[in-house]
Length: 262
Image 1 (cartoon, one colour):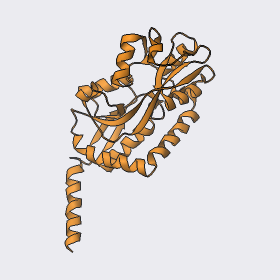
Image 2: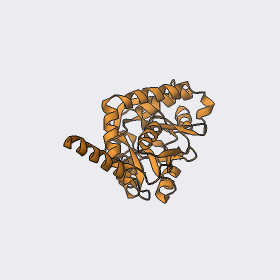
Image 3: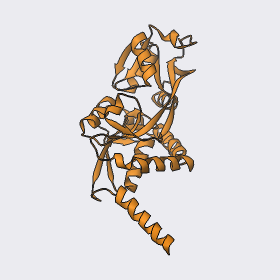
Image 4: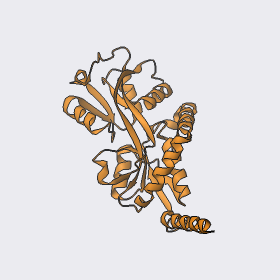
């Protein structure tokens, strides 16, 4: 009997800590609009692994998540910084972002970063020094870890674009020399956009970065991070993250191309 009473008290404590102030409360969330299968904009919807995980975890906490697909990546981060959006469904954890975001300790997904190049004129690559004076194509707001970001800024010419298709087109036309992007995302996008025969990843991996769920400093959601960490760990252990990654990879490839053009 005493054990049952303790269990009930523990459950009540859990509910008190994690239940939102109002059952009807809605949260706003945004994410990278061009990074399948993690997240991408399809029509007016933000979909992918990270939006699905974010919606599920906050639903378990009693929240309704409104996913916005109206922002480019740089603007998404700015809106959270300003307090207009509560959650970033997935982002790299770098010092500049920690000034306005609280990150989960458990990652949503690992993201090996590769260098994509033109198949006909690949870079003869033995190390980062071979990228000096080359032209890199980056999406607005992109980061690939503090060390590599600094290397690019100090040693390469950077051309920013607002849509990933622009980078693939420029790489296929040899207007840029390389493009850093997550290996899985880059492969999916090159196939979907029809650039697989013109663009390829080098064997070298810049780094293995991690995408984390993040909540804004101006939200009151930091208190839920312990729950989120535990659930993310469980979702990795029971295979949920792997299944969702596979599902959304196929969903991206199977969708009509015009839906992914923003």
